[in-house]
Structure formats: structure tokens, C-alpha cells
Amino acid sequence: MPTETASQVVTDGRPVAQPGSLERGIDILLALSAAAHPVSLSQLCRATGLPKSTAHRILGVLCSRELARRVGNGYLPGELLETTTGITRLHVPGTRKVVLPYLLYLYETTRQTVNLAVPSGLEARYVERLYGHNRVDSRSDGMDRAPLHCTATGKALLAFDPALRRELIARGSFERMTRRTITTLTGLERELDQVRRQGVAYAQEEFTEGVSCVAAPVFGPGGRICMSLGVAAPAGAAPLARLGISVRGAAQAISAALLSA
Image 1 (cartoon, helix red, strand yellow):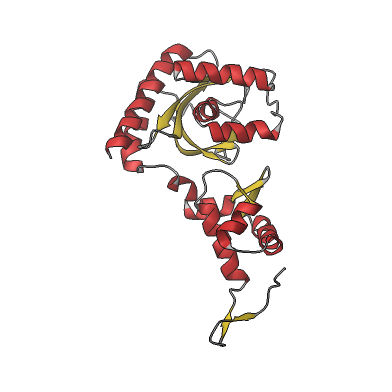
Image 2 (tube, rainbow, N blue to C red):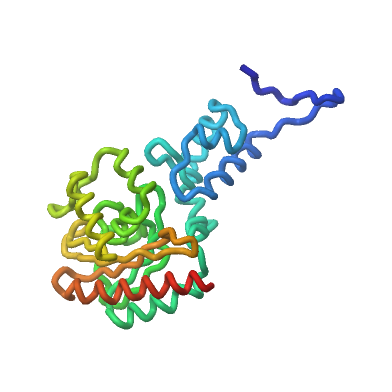
């Protein structure tokens, strides 16, 4: 097996400096930033050409500095990197200018908290949030991220993204957040089948007590789901079926706008 050295000799006999740790770390970060789903150590090694021991060591440093994070058996950009560079937004095909008018219209229509989410590992990450003075309190406040299995935005993403669904199922367990949280694979699959049939996902006090949510998928130009659009409201304060019509219509309008953008 080849070993790492400070330099290597090319065919004409001249030594060429090998990339240092900083360059190797940058290569790993670039590979992670291009990924919408967790990247395994083997995949990172193939993408960067680094030995597993070297990649694993550098990943340990990156994770400790919040530039990368471990998700199951893979890796994604860390919280610090996403915050400082806006990597998560790069996964959204289209621009804020295209999407924001529909979010504003949905807020004006519902007068409830509006969330736009993208997948980030095995979580839904909220990249846009609109709300008024009567904002409903949620566990996701301050984090702008939430589990997939017990949120409407997360269910919408899972229902139409087979790869994301397989990754979640491979984890093998679903954390109970409230007494209403679906924690069985059978129950979740039944829920996702309904989302695919109706085009709308619901979460009724499954993530936060007293909060109900409705969400719908947003599709990019390639026909693949890229975001989910949701509305969160106090449980019992608004008819979910009526909210579902508004959310689904707004999500379809955003999909059409992204297609023509």
C-alpha cells in the first residue's frame, strides 16, 4: 500500500510537492458542499483521491470545528460552514427573488408562520421563514431545522425523495418528540403514501405540542423535489384542510416559476 510522503517524483525526476493538510481539507469541503445527501467516507476518498486514514483524520478536525458533521454513516457540511457560506441555499434551484413573492402571498392569505425547507442530512432545514407578531412557538425556533419524520415539511420531502427516505429508514429508529409522534416504520410509510396521493403533508402536534403544520412539495426544473413549503399554526386555530389548499397551490406556483426561470 502506498504511503504518504512530503513529495513525489514524476517521470522527469523532478520532485513535486504533495498537497498539505489545508489543501486536503479544502478538497473534502468542496466535495461535501456539492452533496445534497450525506457522503460516505469511501465516496469522499474516491472524490478527493485521499487515503481513508487521511480523510478520516481531517474529517475529525472539520467536525470538531463545525465545518463538517456526521450524519449516520456519512458526512455533510457543518453548521458553521452552512451559516457563513449559505451552502444550504445553493441546493435550491432558482433564486430568492423567484420564490419570495409566493411566500409573502401565502402569509397574507393564512396569517400563519410560513416555512420553506430543504433537506439537510436527515433533517429539514428552514431557509426562509415568514411570520407576524403572533408567531407560533416551535421546537425549531433558534435552530431553523427539524426532524423529517414528525414535521409536515419533512414528510413532504420524504414522500417524494426515495433516496432520502431510504437513508432515514436505514437509521432504524424514529425519535418520539410528543405523544402524537409516529415512531414506527409502518405508520410512517402509511402517512407518506397518503402524502403522495394528496400532494399535501400534515403534522398535528407531532413535533411540538400545540402546533399543527401543513406542507406541500416544490419541484425543480428536472421534476425532482427540491424544497417543501409549509405553514405552521396553533393546533385547532385554523382548519388544516383549508390551509392545505392554500399551501399546495402556492407550492405548485413556485414549481411552475422555477421551471420557467
